[in-house]
Amino acid sequence: MSAEKTLLAAREFIIMSKQSENLKIGLLDNGSHSLKRGFEMWTQWEESEDAWLLKEAVIWVHHGIELVLKQLLVQTNEFLVFQDVNKAVERLGILRNKRGMKNAGILDLFDHDDKVMSVGFRSLIERAAITLSISELEEGGVLRSKIDRLTRYRNKIVHFSLELDVIEVSSLLSDLLNPLLSVLAREINDHNFKQVVIPKIMKLAQPIQKYLEFVRSNIVDSAITATKQALPPKGSGKAGVVVQVMGSGLSISLLMYLKEIRELCALKDYSVVILVDRKILESQLLKAITENSDICPMVPSSKGELIELLNSNLSNVIITTIQKVDPNYLADKNTLFIGYNLLPGTEKLLSFSSIGVRILFTNILSPRDIEIYGDIVGMYDLQQAMLDDVLKPIKIEKIEFPLDQVDSYKQIDQEMYELSDGFDYIHRSPPFLKTCALKIIQHFELRKEVVHGKAIIIVRDLDAATLLLECILELRPDWREEDIRNMVVSTISSRNSFDESNFILNTFQDKDSSLSLLIGTGSYLIGYDNRYINTVYVTCPISNQLQYRLVGLTSRYDEGKSENIIVDFIGLDWSIK
Image (cartoon, rainbow, N blue to C red; front, top):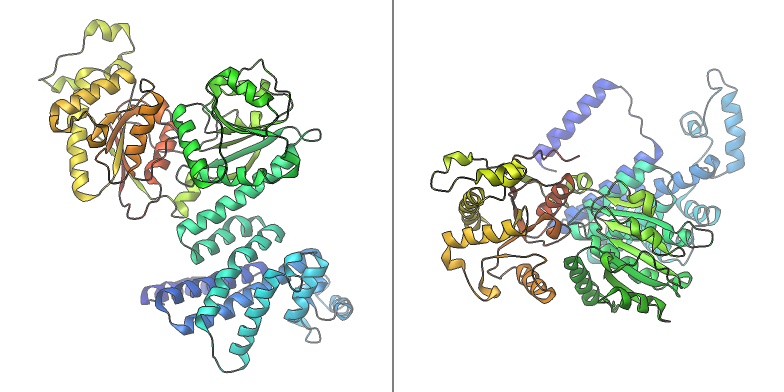
């Protein structure tokens, strides 16, 4: 332990000593501390290869397992933690007859009666397996076998000389982690343990991406359970809502969910329809699913083709924009509708099929989502991602300038200003956009000298996007190229064909491509994900929902990614709740 950490621990101890002369830690808290300490020691061993740390890791982890198994027994019957249950019952009666001990609890026996003994570890694990019907702890089970091996190592360390195969022991601790925590997450009846302690252990023991796999796995398990419960005729058809902040792998969770539901017998005759509201998302999802699984989704080109696919005898996986949904049409077979990052206004889904099941995967929860899809079944929000260091902090830079000081530009057309919303018109006017272009170029070129990355520019509408592009190219004519692969800046919008949009996005997704600045409207880019984006320029008023998404997009984790910035030309309030 470093000198700084030692000093901090000493201070905490002094504070604790001043507050109370006694240290009282509950059974679950005690076990939680031991597990966290054990996996912390294991992580430190992997960094330093100091064998003494591995020894500590084995002792701490084993001690933690023993205590949390006792917690499982206590949840069911407190007497089960004693070696002789009948004797414990008898001794508790005697203790309660003593003066001042009328309300003594079962665990007080350990403090006031030396004639009772705690159950031994082997009997403890047997009781947990049999009494609580935990199959993973039954003899011969995978998790049980790993715990038994850890017990043998622990006994050698405690009772004999030390001789460990460090590679084998380290691998054993690694292999124990996920199955052990999965059982504890399912069996321990404590919200704090599930929501705080288990994620903290995962973070200590695994790198960020591995930790996210654990988070997504738990979310998908909950979504699968909720889907089963929502199935007709007993279910309501509302499987619920999965909420994950951008950058935490929402599309990965969706793919995991798709793979699992295809294996469910109850859904074998169901068609699966993934609904999006923009072609940019349709394209992204199609690519993600086909490249990472053996699922080959079908993409209908019209309302009629969608109906034909639903009426076919095949259990298809379909990706379609919600605009192709005919609200007056009822499919004549069971259908699972999966909404993906749909903007508010998806009420037509309710009338699309009276016999279907629906679930939503989204980055942001909208007001009517729960009403339409059901309760939240899995959540990993912005605040939690920041606490977990999954998303990196961002910096908000506000650049404001009065237009009347830009003397070289033409003044705003007064008649147009009066006919439209003045504030709205300013932020798509030539003087404003030309000034933005200059300041964006200056800011972006300075950023490129410090850190490699991509940037997006949010504009009011398509006309503003075109005008801003021309302003930028006027100032940097060498950025103008016919071939998109050699461009530095480009617009993207619904004016592009489907193939053009795909080509632009794929080029922008390439870390090493020259295309580094992408201009678009918030409604078009909302939901777009690119891990290389570290800068966002906001040139127009945007919704709180889009603010939230831009924060998630900019701060998402990528190796080597450092400072993330949102440059605000409007003066928005970024105190996102």
